[in-house]
Image (cartoon, rainbow, N blue to C red):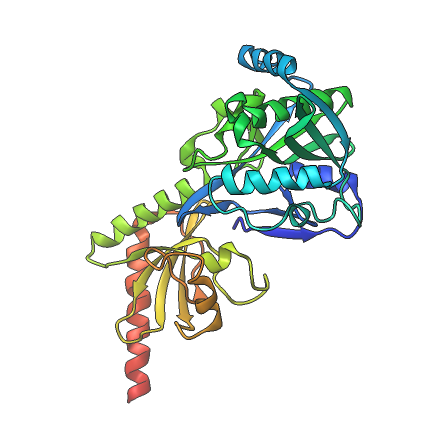
Length: 363
C-alpha cells in the first residue's frame, strides 16, 4: 500500500534532502512529506511529483520569449533569505488578492526551518520593477538538487507571468550551480491549479506503480493512484451488483492525514467499498484495492462511530457526503485476490460465516 509520510528534520542534511526529493517528498516547514492523494474542495486528486533533468533541459521558444521580455522590464537577484518588511508586505497582498483558495499561516511558518535552525539551505529570488519588489520565490538547494518552495507576486503585475518567470530564473540559476535536478513541486490529476509548472520545460513524473521517473508520454492517466484505485473499486462494485449485493464507495480522510501509528490495527487505504452487515450498525465488510500488488483484499471491520473525537475532528475538513469519517478497526482480512470476479463469492461466504456465528452465539 502506498501511504503518506512525514519526516521532520532536525539539522541540515543536503544529501538526505536530495534522496527524499528523488523519492517524491516535498518540503513544508521543518518537514519533508509526501502523499499520493490531495483533496481539493472534497475532490480526490492524484498527487503527481515532478522534476526537471537539468542536463537535458532545453528552454522552449515560449520560455525564451518570456525570459527575454521580462528581463527587459524587470531586474532580479538571488539572495540569502531575509524576511524583511518589504517582503512581508508583498506576501500579505499576495495572500489576500492573488492566491486561489485558503493560504493559511504567515510566511515565517511556511519557511520554518530556513532561518533560525537553518535545516534547509533556502535562498530567495527577488524581482523588482523600477526598484520596487513585485515578486519573489523561495527555493532550497541540496548537493545536486534544487526544490522550488513557493512564489508570490503583486496583483498589479499578474499579466507578466511572474510565477513562471521566477521559476525559469531558478532553473537557470540551478544550471549555473552545476546541479542535476530541479523540483518544481507537484501537479494534480483532477485540478489545473498547478499546471503552470509544466511551462518550465520537459518535466518528468514519478510513476505510482513502478516508482520510477518517466516522461509525460510514458504515463497513462489510468495508472494514476486515485484514478486507478477508483476504477478498480468500480469494477468490484459492478461484480457485486451482478449478484445483487449493494456496496458504497468512500474516501477515508483519516488515513489521508496519517494521524495514527503505522502498526495500529486500523484501515490503511484511502478508498474502499463498504458492504453493510444488516445485523450490526458498526460491523462492515470492506473491499480495498492494493495498487502495488494489483489485487483486492476483503476486510471485516468495526467502526467507532460519530461520537468519537476523530469523527468530530475530520468532519470539519471534508464534506460528509462521499466520505466515511469513522475510525475503522480491522478485525480480520483475506489474502490478496487478483480476480475481481471471485470477490462476490468470497464476500457472500464471509457474510454467511458471520450470520452463522451470530446464530450460534444466540443458542
